[in-house]
Length: 135
Picture 1 (cartoon, rainbow, N blue to C red):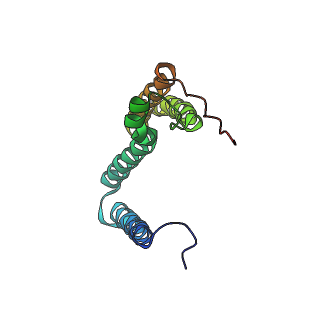
Picture 2: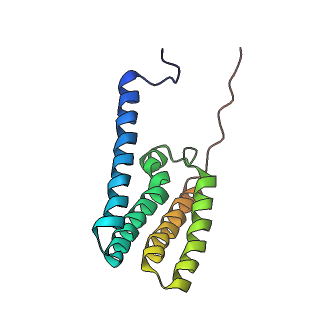
Picture 3: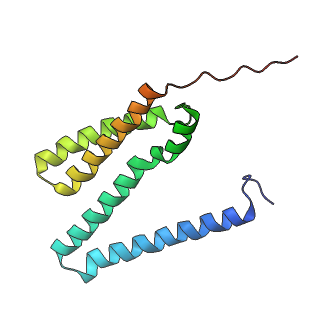
């Protein structure tokens, strides 16, 4: 019985993706904890964390083509972009204080991406939703 509204292929794909992510996490934790020296493990963990952070922050830009085509930012998550900007600025300062490039670089990129995403709200403001007529 299908209760989520997803078709069976999508559900199977999501299960495989979830299991792949868990397996990958186990491999990373095992490698950084047991198979490498502490400095190399820290470098690998920092690099992977930086990449994941950049993908997370860039996620709202997946709809960039739709924004440009429709000339409307209605599909962009404004609150998420604002929170990414705030969080990026806070962690950028924190990374600067610690002198940690694994914190500084992805958050500098995240702040830049958030500012670019917010600039689309200036270029293409959201169009009001069309009112439905019940005639």
